[in-house]
Every structure is written in structure tokens, then in C-alpha cells.
Image (cartoon, rainbow, N blue to C red; front, side, top):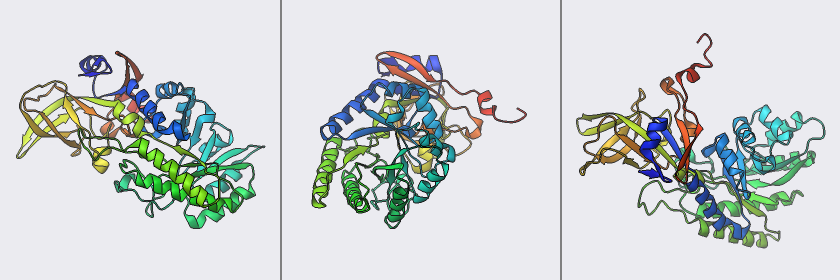
Amino acid sequence: MRISGVDALELVRTYGTPLTVVNVDAIDAAIAALHVACDRYKTEIAYAAKAFFCVELARHLTGHSGLALDVCSLGELVTAERGGFPANRITLHGAGKSDDELRAALERRVGRIVVDSAAELDRLAELRSGDARLDVMLRLNTGIEAHTHAFVRTGGDDTKFGIAQNDEAAAAAALLAHPWMRFAGLHAHVGSQIYDGAPFVANSHALVEAAARFASHGLVAERIVIGGGFGVQMRPNAGGEKLDMVATIADVARCVRECAADLGMPPPNVGIEPGRAIVAAAGTTLYRVLAVKRQHSRTFAIVDGGMYENPRPAIYGAHHHVVAVTGHSSERVEMTLCGRTCENDELGAAVLPKNLAAGDVLAMLATGAYTFGMAGNYNRLPRPAVVAVHAGEHRLWVRRETVDDVLARDTGA
């Protein structure tokens, strides 16, 4: 097995397992494909750092001049800064921002802030010092619900995100009371892993209607951002797991243009915030098999990773396709792939060689998004290394944690 021309077993020998491998060529190809869909309609693309982020990725993304960046914590912002990402291309998100994060926006360490509540506008006013000015977008809850898992649904009635319609007037009043907060537009995100373009079109329609309501207060939205959540194929040959981005962006652009015309207003610019759509397919996790056990009707393959470095299967049943790098029996059987933590820790079902044994290497595909970024230290296990591959070469991006790293904050350790 080769990843961007690099032998997977060479990576295992060099860096150990579990190992997160990031294919930089695949990231660049995904960004290029998004530009094909978006540039015709002057749709802004902003990478959602929460999907996967580190200093070296930030440094790489600075080379994509047409790409903006979304961060939702001080940690993500500092990561971007240390990678040299330009502040004017960064947007600060977050449903519950700390005072330090709000101060960072007021200090112009970001180009704009997406405010999640009217109360947050009041907090910005309280924290302001001197003659600070700020570009502000408002995140709305447009009520659009997408067909996706409840844990990754961020729109509709049962979500913490965004300003409800009955609170829009209070938000408008706060902006008018503080003209140093320049109203830059509206934002709404409806969920993740969405394979149907209709929710994005409905969300754009609702945002344009909301823009008309804010225009009645004298606040003109120059931009609407319809979020991300564009579905990524996780199963080989799964026909339903494919979102047509070109058609979706075209439909959104048409909807915004026609809706704005119906409301007698100029059409706002449109932005999107893909994260998973850029990095998911670029990631591969390499595991070493620790044991293969037959228990009644099931066969368990236990690997040296698990929910501590990829919690998504345990949280909401996320699926990743798994292939064997070693252990090439012609006969294949279904096994339950499990991690090593002291939980059931099931990573999913996989069809693997019948002769799979301890010491063999497995590759879990499409792990570029929401794995490394969600990893923890359950059972005090150190998090894996991240290595980047590009055109037949490999380079360490994040070193493997040690037990000493895990214990570093323990007093008396």
C-alpha cells in the first residue's frame, strides 16, 4: 500500500503506530475541486480548522491565496498565527467564546467575528478598549434541519447554535447602538455529512430573507455564509454518499440571486466553510494488530488505537473503511475492529483476511477529519503522531506524545 507514493510499511517502521498520515496532495486536490465549483460564482471558501489543524497545515494553507480560515478557539487561532496564516483571512467562531477570545477579535487578530447571540454583542462592548473596531457577522438559527445524525445537526429547533428569529431585533439594536461593530453579514450552518443539496439551498433562501429583515433596520448584509457540512464518501461504491458540489453551489447562487431580486435588494456575496470536504479523504490511520480473538459468533481484531484517538465511531457510529496492509489471505471474513481501551471500543465492522494475526498492519481510510482534532488521553494513552506525505516524500507534522507528555500537568509527577 502506498500513500502519495510512500510505502505505508516504511511509515510504520519510521514513525510507529497508531499513525495519522495526511496526504497533502489530496488536500490540494480537494481545494482545487472546490474552486472549480465556487470561483464562477465568486463564492468564498474558508477552511474549517476544527476538522483537523496543526501549525504545519496552517503554514501549508497560507499558500492557497484564495482560501480563508475559520477558527473556533484561542488554541486554533494561535495555531494559525504560528503557521503564519494572515489575520485578515481568519474568522472567529464559537457558540460560547471566552473573554480572551473576544479580546483577540477586538485586537484585530482576526478579520471578522461570527457572533452567536445578542448577549455576545454586549460582552464585546464591555470588553472594548480604546478605539477598537470590528467586523461582525451574526450566526442565525434559520430553522433548517438536515437529514443527518442528531449529534452533528447544528440547525433546527434542538440546537444550541445561532440567534433565533425572535431575538434578531435585539441583535440589530445592539449593532446600531455600537457603530464601531461593522455589520458584515449573516451566517447559518445546518449540520454535517449532508449528501443532499436541498438543505443548503433552503438555508441560503432563509438567510437572504433574514438579510431583508436586517436591511429594514438599516443593516445591509454584504455576505451570507451557508456553513459547511458537505457530505464526504466514507464507503467504497456507496452511491448515496456523494454530494454534487458543482450543482449545489450553482443552485445556491441561483437561489440567492432570485430571492434577492424578489425582495428588491442586491444579492449578497456567498461563503462556504468546508472542513471535512477538504481533509477527510486525505487522512489514513495505520494500526498494528495486537490480538485476534474468536468469541462465540464474532471475531474481534484488537488494534493499538481506538476511541482515544478516534472517538467518532463510539460517539455516533461513524464509519471508516478498513483494509489490510499485511495479512493477505485469499479468504476474507467479517471481523469487529476494536481499540485497545478498557471499553467495548468498537471501531466498526471490517472484512479482513482470515489469517490476520497480531503484528499485522491495517489502514483505516478517510480519517483526516475529526479524529486527530478530537483525540484525548483516555486510559492515559499518548496521542499518535501525524506525518505528512507529498509526492513520494514524508515529513513529521506532529510528534507522538509520550507518557511524560500525558503526565506533564500532574502536580507531583
